[in-house]
Amino acid sequence: MSDGLKIRLDRTLCDGFGICAKHAPQYFSLDDWGYASLIGDGTVPEEDRDAVMRALLDCPVHAIIYMGEHRPAGATAPQHGTEQMPPEPEPKGEDNEAISGFVR
Ligand code: SF4
Image 1 (cartoon, protein in one colour):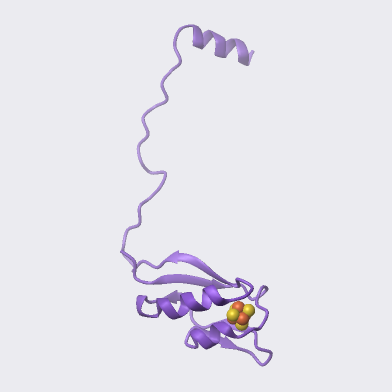
Image 2 (cartoon, rainbow, N blue to C red):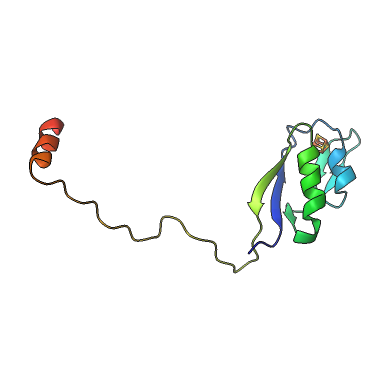
């Protein structure tokens, strides 16, 4: 279950077009030269998703980066690498000899 999204702003890419601040002024502020800063930590609640996604998609230099869905604290995301994997089957018979012959 998603609770909005998470974004990041790469200020080294920003070219100061100001489009983001027009679409989502509560998330992007512009400095005196028109370069954007992210307001907050990049967490965007579901109700602001459309405005922020529009800013993200309209940024001419792709300085706004989608970091994934934001999940509320305590929600468990699927964990990778913790599943129990069955042991690798041992190669048997001639295969075994062929492998050890190859290694030597
Ligand atoms: S739309 Fe992109 S280039 Fe323009 S101010 Fe925002 S981040 Fe910078």
